[in-house]
Image (cartoon, rainbow, N blue to C red):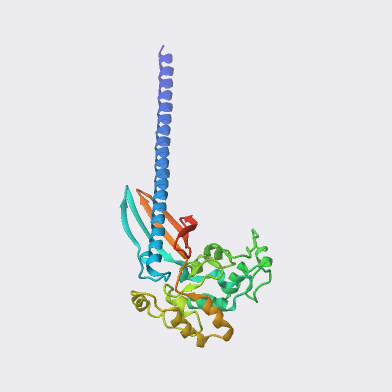
Length: 314
């Protein structure tokens, strides 16, 4: 009888232990499922709020277009960042940036795919201004141009990329994201972080808006030009009341510094209006944060459409 009672007690303890382990596991899994569901709900809610902010930005661009007759400057409403706005359970911030105030990497080639000598030299000067090796201009050109002939000693085509492990090939077409430059051999994330604020990936032939361009981009339009980058605060101050410098001013400054064949190319790539903007929307709900990047194109009629959206990365 004592032995039977001992076995029964052991069995009871085993059953209780098993039940405790099972209950703990079910509780932990339930808590994890609830946390996962709450995160997914917050992400979806944040995405919908970001889409609302995107629509708001498009309306701001339309209103500015009607008021300013196509000229795009940094004293207009679109250029004012959206201050932190409280939303249900979190916060919303956002801003618009004129991407045509950057060097368009796709302008390294002409519309027919041939090398654009003016844009190529401009990009080399920009790289040097940022203390990066000018050889990346040749590598970027070969990444974009349609031929399979390397641009000088610094270029690279299929023969280089297929030798990597794993092998790959350059696209030989205009890029859709500047992050593609990270695929250039040896370029690296540190160089990209230095260069990224000054470049964009827009359709071939898209001009620079001198009203919104940064000092380094303006100063590298022509050799020996150093009128804007040295004093960023003064440049910003001069832009409080409209376009500075104007396209006419820039053309007058750079023409004496350019070769005859470069002058027409420079005039085609300089303007005071913009079609392409990037919206950045950050939504925080609880412990969840979502960042939406929107490439917005505003057509000549003033109406806009979203060309590309990315989450988390530019």
